[in-house]
Amino acid sequence: MDLSLAGWSLNPLFRASTDALKLVDFPQFARDRFGIGAVELNNIYFESTDAAYLDRLIAAGQKANSNLLNIAVEEKGDLSLLSTDARLESVSNYARWIPIAKAIGAKAIRANSGGKDVTDKNAAIDACIDSFRRLCDVGRTNGIAILIENHWGISADAGTMVRIVEAVRQTHGSGAMFTLPDFGNWPDEADRYASLARIMPFAGAVHAKVNDIDENLSHPRFDHARCIRIAESAGYDGYLGIEYEGKGDPIVGIERGTRLLRQILRK
Image 1 (spheres, one colour):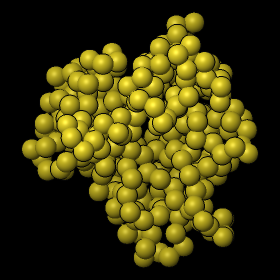
Image 2 (cartoon, helix red, strand yellow; image 1 turned 90 degrees about the horizontal axis):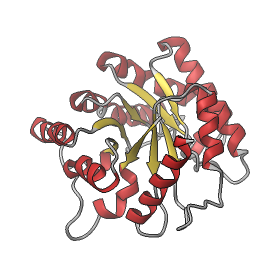
Image 3 (cartoon, one colour; image 1 turned 45 degrees about the vertical axis):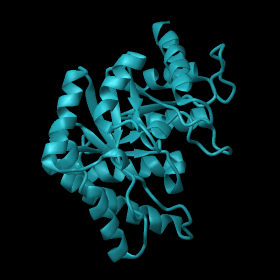
Image 4 (cartoon, one colour; image 1 turned 180 degrees about the horizontal axis):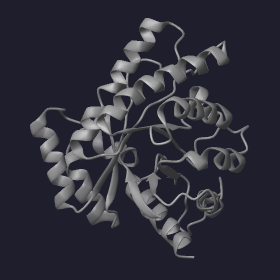
């Protein structure tokens, strides 16, 4: 495994009121500041989606010798809605990022499951499966995989994530959809390690949350080494994406995360 950097880690810099970090400068920033040569983009930081801007982004990745891995998409709507018209509008909102991912040479987009306040979970899961199948229809045309992360809503449950991915793969094949396991996103009542072990065999990307690492590289919330062993045991050998969303300086948080994860990976 090698390290990548999720753009959300630098959210305060991207959204700064003055001298904000630009997405086209992100690949070089990750390379120069952290020695990381692969980045995960967020659609909310794109200044444009026209061809000229996308060409600038491609050039920025090439100049930094950096891989543009995927686009984490946050869009209006909910892919688990029981209202078909509203849900299909949500699918359309997400789907428009698939050809953009193709244009910049990324391999996947991440879509949120939705379903935060569902009353009929089984119906919401069925609706979500249909939504992801529709996204995979577009993804297959463009050579782009679709990722589902343990983020919130119905995707906060590992069993639900597996149910969705397996159902979509039955109709679209094993290369159409993958999980994006995040070490830190599980609700408090979940068994973090058992949940990771359940979704990791389907992983197309992985996020290592690094919010609470202190100056001694201690992390009280969970064991990163154990999480990485779960990934390795499942046969995952892709990028390990650093994602920081703590309350402190993101530069310090990412640096600590980088040091800790590299230390673990060397063992």
